[in-house]
Structures are given as C-alpha cells and as structure tokens.
Length: 584
Ligand code: DGT
Ligand code: CA
Ligand code: CA
Image (tube, rainbow, N blue to C red; front, side):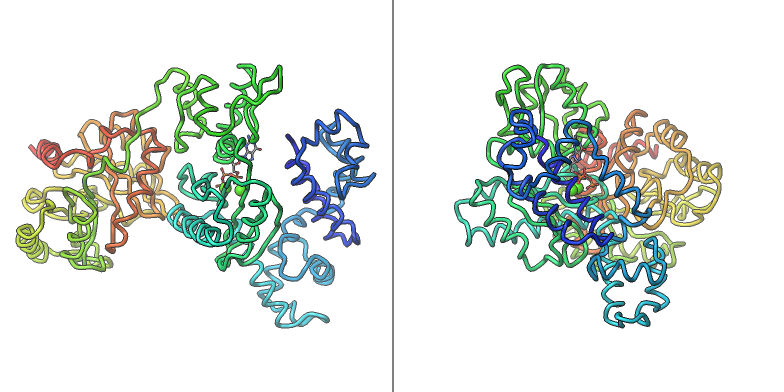
C-alpha cells in the first residue's frame, strides 16, 4: 500500500506552496493528504481498478489532485511539483520548517531582509534586525529565536541515554491517560520502535507504534497530542501524528490494526538497510513485504503480519533481535541459524569502573557500595582517579591507602565483593601514573587517556600501545576518547591498539556514559575479530549513574557480543584469576 507515501508527497507540496504564498491550495492539499492517509483501501489498487474516477471518490481529492496522483503512480514523479520545487530557492525547505510566525509572515521577512538560508535567519535574529522591521517587534524576534532553537533541537540527534528515558516517560503518561479514557485499548502494544528500539547510540526522532481499531485510534491520538509534555503538534491523523516535545524533540505515533501490528513493528524498527534486504528475501521467496503485512505474490493473500516472529519464520529466518538489524550480516546468519547468542542484562555480575567522593564522584564510598549491592551485583571495582588528574581531584598515594582501609572496613558489612581499583592516567610517554609497587596492590587497574588529544596518530598509538604492554594494566577505559556531539575521537590506529591488547591479554572497556558509549558498536564488532575480551562499565559519578549499564549493554549487543566475550559476566574468582595472571 502506498497511501502513506502519497500523503507525504502532498504534505511536502503543501509546505512549499505555503511559502510561495499560493493561497488556499496548501489547505486543500493537506486535507487530501490526511484523507488519503486514513483511507481504508489501497489507493494504488483503487487507481488500477477504477482509474482517476476512483481517486476522486476519496474525500478532498478533486480533479487536479487526482491527476497528480495518477501521474505519480504512473511515472514516480509529478512534473508540476518538480517545477514548484525548482522555483523555490535552496534553503527554503529548511526555512519553511521554522513555524514561529507562520509561513506568510516568514516570507515577508525573508524578502525584506534577503534571508535565503537558516544561517541568514540566525544572523538576522542575533543582530536584532528583525525587531526593527515594520510589522515585527521584539516579541516576534523572540518567537523566531525560540523556533530556531526548537528546529535545531529537533534536527540534531539525541543521545540514547536521553531519548530512552524520555520515550519511556511519554509512553507511560500516554498509558496512564488511556487507562482512563479508553480502557479497552491493549496498552501492552504501545512500544517505541525505530533507532531507539535498536538501541543506537544517537536517535534522530522517537517513533512510537500502537495497535487499535478505528474508534480507539482517534481516542489515542487525542490523548497523545494533548499530553502535557507536548510543545507543538505538527500533524494529527487517525493513523499517524507527529509532535514536538516542549524540550524540542520530535515524536511520531503510528496506530495500526492488529493484523498489521507485527509487520509495522518490523518495518518501523528498521533499519532501513535491513528492511530493504529483508524485502528482497521476501520477493525471492514469492512474497511481498510491507508495513501492512507479508503477502503471497500470487494470490495477494496475507500470510503473516500479526507478529514479527511470524514474519521472520515465514521467510525461513531465525528471529533477529532489533539490535542486530543493521544489515551487517545478520540476515545471512539468520538463514543458517547462526545468530550470536547475545549477552543479556541478567548475565552481568558487577561493575568495574566507578567513582566516589575520594576523587570526582558525588557520593561517598559506602553509598556507592550499598547501591551496587542493592542492584544484585556480586562485585564492584572502586576506581577513583589517579594523582595527576588534578581537575578530577585525583588521589595521591596516601589518600588511596586511606581508601583501601575504608574498603577493608566496609567489606565486613557488605556481602558484595569490593575490588580495589583505580582509573590510572596513561601519561604522555605511555607510562602509568603510580609506581609499580602501588599498582601491584590493586585488584584492577583501568588505564585511561584524558589529555594531549591533539597529538599525531603515531604518537597516540605509541602511547596507548606502551600502556597495553605494561603488565600492571588490566583494562583500557573509553578507548577512543570521543564525546558524542562534543569531541571527536583522538586519532589513533585501532588495528594496532587491538593487536597489542590481544597479544597482552588486555580487556577493552565499553563505557556506558551516554556521551561516551566508547567503544561504539562498530569498533566492538571490529575488536571482537582480534579475539579481545570486553567489560561493560558505567564509569558512574553518582549512585544513579549505576543504572546506565543498559546503554553500554545495548552497544555490546549491537556489536554481536556474547556472554563469554564480557568479563564482568564471570564469577568474581574467575575475574580475579584473569587479572592476576596478567601481572605474573
Ligand atoms: P533515526 O530516527 O534517524 O535515528 O533512525 P530511524 O531508524 O528511527 O529512522 P526513521 O525515524 O526515519 O524511520 C523509522 C524506521 O522506518 C526506519 O528505521 C526504517 C523505516 N523506514 C523509514 N523510511 C524507510 C524507507 O524508505 N524504506 C524502508 N524500507 N524503511 C524505511
Ligand atoms: Ca526514528
Ligand atoms: Ca520517524
């Protein structure tokens, strides 16, 4: 069914017309788009059977729109729309999305100040040229500034660690609202899809899917667009609505009937690349796959669609979990029943990187231990910063010895095993920040680079390789040094780093901080080929950070890791054995 595609085409054209001050037409186009979206039948089939007359039977679709749709179905594009787009100067599409003022006023403004692009508009706001313009004032300028800010937020990617709790919050307030307004809706079917369900490190927009009949669908959409978190309603229809949260992030909600729920869940979970490959497999097997279901090519009959499992099974594939759906070989593995048995949350027995107020952590040692024990862990490593990390209040040797005493004392009161550790600076020459006789006293040494990022690839590689050859180092923390949205990874030859780590039996960290997620999925995938082991660590600076384990776990799963690949799934005795052997 291509109703959605055609509706989207009309919505886009409406936007362009609005900016070009074509009167009343945008409204007509939007009305037609919405009706097509909500039209029960497949518009392509209607056209095949009844021709253009069939199209004009759709409410809101007149002769000329029907002509355009027919042309689109026949040729894949509409000459007139292409012309219209051609006339609009580049940059217009972006400007049109700034809805602070309405398209007409925006157009006036653009003409008066010769604004052609978003950066022109930003300049005009920053230089206060808009408030001086007739018909505009300080208030309009502020509105535009706010609208630009929202635009930028909704067009920049959000960290997984921010998007996931946000989506959970929205879904739970939607459920709470519906349990009063429409208790007959199956709330368990409301789920986030898209890159978020695949636990990708950053999220473009949040996609939510739900199952309902027609009557329930309207109730659900009404509840959705009036949630208190909603800042702006972009569009509202029975099958799809888009909003922007007050915080600036975009959310799409789609509602489908039960017979399509699995197909829609599969489709909207993506990734696009995985979907395209899956659709090709379906074709080869004699089926057609869409977001509405899996259909027999011959009879047109639906053969699957209620659940994702059913679709993969029908296509002769093992079920593929969302984290693997990136077209990185998962479909080939699924044909042969050779998918990895991914690590699960329940496999993790401890956390090997966290801070207390001995260095830059917020909480004291006891609180961190108490919380980790409450989470059911068997062990944790306390890894405050080493002495040269002055800004992070790194510990001198005396302070560290005091911490050891406290650990010993607290160990008597807790069941959880507390390991003596440190996040030790890897200095410029690759040496470690404490003398060997101190490092030997530690159960776990987590080596990290925090300075001198701007050096050459050769130097950085040499520095890290030297550290990996040091027998007192156990784990390489956040190996790439990147900070999402803030700082690129330092230049380093990962091939050489992974090789040195493998030769020396070192463990690679998967750091769970939302802005790090380092190693990322692709590097994990690569590193596994070197036979490396990993740990998933939160690098907690507060007790509540301990819960961020799930973000790193997601990256580990996206990197195809199994339980055995990850050392903090091992019992404590086995873990200690590994690190002891490294030192001998
Ligand atoms: P994002 O939002 O940029 O982080 O990434 P996604 O994967 O959430 O992408 P989004 O929100 O544009 O679309 C959600 C899913 O819908 C996407 O993962 C796969 C599916 N999808 C979107 N466009 C297409 C398409 O053109 N072809 C196919 N086969 N699937 C698509
Ligand atoms: Ca998305
Ligand atoms: Ca989306």
